[in-house]
Length: 418
Image 1 (cartoon, rainbow, N blue to C red):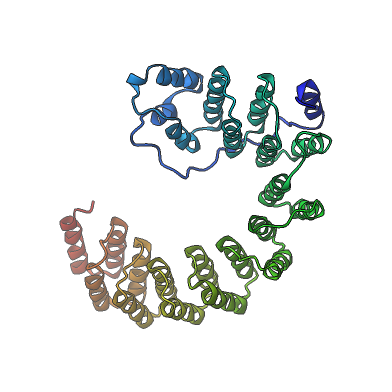
Image 2 (tube, one colour):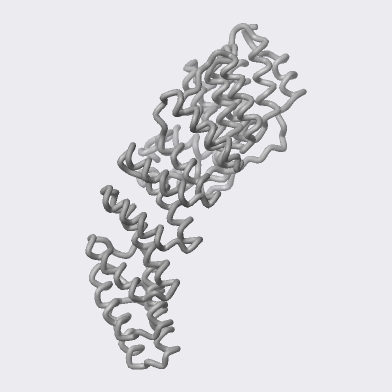
């Protein structure tokens, strides 16, 4: 079967492409291009003017000398789902009008449809290629399946797989099974994910690092911690070097289960093998210890990251968490010792909220002279914000210390804080 034709469309229409799947705009990860004003313009325009505006930008380049398709793609996350769809529709129309024959261009366009979670548009790209005499391939089917799973339309994805199985020209390959594993992992459907993993092995394909990343991630997302542990054991038995993503997911599983000893040993093991731990891993451990008031464990974590020479961001994160914990417990001597230790390490407070927690601790224990010394030291490396000054004003006013209150207000004026 060289082309899909109406038979394919009928098959899909019977089994899927549901019009009720959710089209969720994906979150922005890149800022709009500062060189190209077009993305900003698209944000302001009504949907009805999107395509005509794009036509003008390409037909009259002198009016938009910095126009590029790449800058347009960078703005997709910032657009509404409807506008993002119109941009991709416009690109497809241009490709078809120009008789584009490059498969990679269509694959890329379908991958963008998956990013904006629009399976119907991906299907439109697919069938438009057929109408223009471009034969489907296994890779194109895989891309369409990915778009369907991204849109939570598993019925159509399974229908496409059945069509691939019965064909001679676009049989399922390793990537096909991987696409289903990744898709169901993202959806948190571990039963389907594991079934496709078994199917992949039955078809004669080996698991890759990407496979295990999806399997472990899917299990943790679904709180199937035993499953995640089994896949990790399987990774070690195969000799595949694990990834940071897998380690972060496993650590999240330990933290969710409050396995304090396992968390500590896991961190040490990671440092022995990898010599470093990621910021995300530290965030998970710090969050666990903070939630359960594990001060001693936090201090031990700090010693571990200092001795192993971790990055400044990691050291700052742990130091700040310790200071916050002591401040919450009104352990002022420990707060001051921890602040001094942090400053000696060449670090400063990460945010105004941390400073304000310490200030509140001073007010609760009524240590006003020591608060003055604290502020004197902190100002050398940290600029006080309006919210911090507000905390000082409110605290001194409650304590009836009007002389100090007047001093703070004058400091605010000198600092230009309003």
